[in-house]
Length: 168
Image (tube, rainbow, N blue to C red; front, side, top):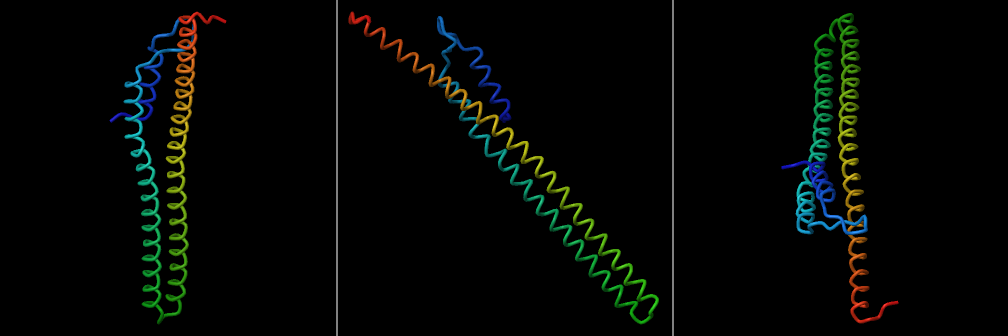
């Protein structure tokens, strides 16, 4: 399996190696070859999208694990508080530790969530850029192909008129 960039390179190579039409910047390309490459791009495009979805899923899993860990830490802090409730100084210390654990858990959960979101955003940004580049390349190729066929139709029209002796 090749990457989208590889397929775009193949499209570019096909166009670069295509035969030029006389007295024109237009080229003649193998339609089947271009359609095969475009088909491969379409087949491989969902893999990029699935990868982005997996990243989002992993992001949610990381956040869930951080929340579970925070709940576990809070529950542990509560158990410690109940155990030491009989002695005032120990109780006060347990409260302080529970609050510290709670603060640490909240900070840890925030950090994990922010890091996961940042990572997911980075991957999604890269995927978005790749898709935009592919779209622009396709639009450029489509315009080029449209221009090429328009020129061919014009040449055929003029040649037919010339054959009929209808020179203008």
